Length: 313
Ligand SMILES: Cc1cc2nc3c(=O)[nH]c(=O)nc-3n(C[C@H](O)[C@H](O)[C@H](O)COP(=O)(O)O)c2cc1C
Image 1: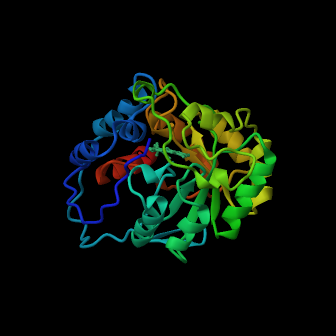
Image 2 (image 1 turned 90 degrees about the horizontal axis):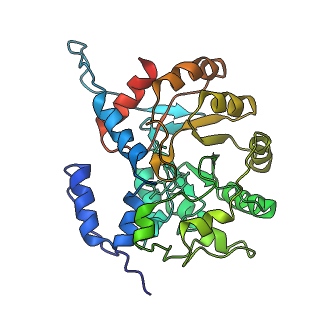
């Protein structure tokens, strides 16, 4: 069956994310929309992520003499126009035929960092070439096959990845009911898998089959292993417990990405960001001079602010 992805190019007015979701839903195939939009099981964690931000309130300050805010910052040696960087997400080709190529261009124009997923519909090289000189990170779903890990990290490093994001919270595909109802299978190839001859390209496979090749038993020493392969900073993504944060930092992680994966693969965890977690982890981050960043597919700007306040207050 042929998958109909969009090839349209025109500007769109975005009033808010809820309206944009409606517009997208009306134009996209049901299965693809369900994959992008849907969460795991009863989607309680997914909904709580938004609700917990909505419940946080911000007292506006006035009389501070600020006429324009300066959001520029640095992450390691990377200059950014904003402290918000883009979260890795698989299969951008579902939304547009230019896939990650155009996302990379958009993120570069925003002065931020693009994170390309192992399960992208564009090769690492093509996404990197789309925005020359723009910084980007490569997100790794570690494989059971060390040959694949070496191969894909070599590709990412050669194409200029500034850091590796090692995702540790989705070693299995979740019970995603929308995908089950829609019989969703990835309709487009994942060329970063194809490039390694021992693996399939992902096309025609469900999320569980794709994740089956991933390493389930990730241990702290894997962080060093990836650091040695990449000779780049490694950010461990998908930390929710302060205990895991301490383990990752002690094992040499250069960054930890506090996340429940948007509640997409596992339901029942606390909404991000659990404040207690930050309170317990902050001294360790401080000790190790970790910068704090907002990394996400946040819906609205004030959520970003609330995220930061949840860390600081
Ligand atoms: C359609 C979609 C695909 C995603 N694919 C990936 C992926 O390939 N790798 C990954 O680490 N995270 C993936 N994520 C999760 C996001 O990186 C991120 O964790 C999630 O949107 C929630 O934001 P948070 O981590 O700031 O809480 C995906 C998210 C979405 C919406």
